[in-house]
Image: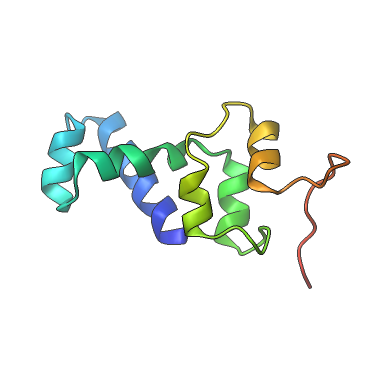
Length: 99
């Protein structure tokens, strides 16, 4: 999941900065397909908290790269993102890290 988040954020940053002018240009530079980039790049729009929790391993055990990709597109609402990805328990409380 970390590699996917890194790719998504890199691609988003390169498009936003103008370093790359299009998804096709990104695909050519990275040796990826337009379809793959369009599928993965929305992960850059996950809330900062959700991205950080994935990076440090504080995410639901059942959430893996395949499950993360299956849940794209994500809701724009960050609380709803947490719910969809399993970070919230049914009562609306945040998932606790496993110690």
